Image (tube, rainbow, N blue to C red; front, side, top):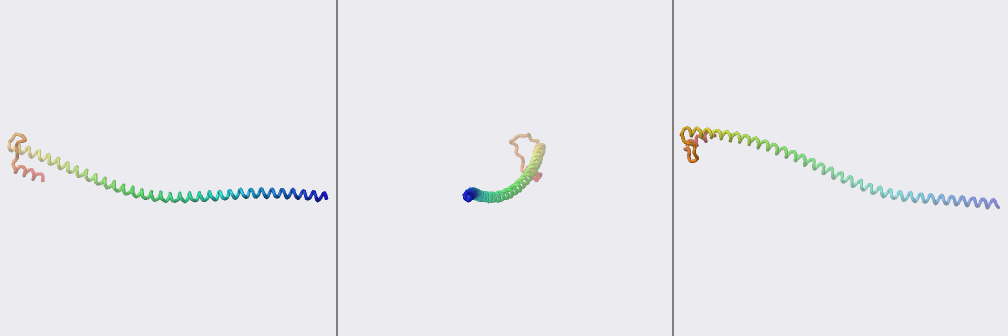
Length: 140
């Protein structure tokens, strides 16, 4: 009977140990499940952030392409404006040369006219129409 009591006590201790192990394992399992759920929630948040980041990236790429196109258009416009400026500068140079040439011609004409008429230089003197016509013909 002592053996049965000892065996019974031994079985009770083993049973208690097993129950404690089961309880510990259940506690570990519960903690793992909580961690799993938290990781699942974290994964969903991360996936949402990833999707948002992808959308932003797509938007930035589109905006970048738009800006590149705009920049290219601006470069073309700048080039056109530079060409126009060069043309205008060349035209102004030509006009300045013409004006200088006309001034020299006018100066010679006036000088020649004064010499021919032997008139003193004064603002009140007026030239005949034929002199103006000659000057005009010289300019053309």
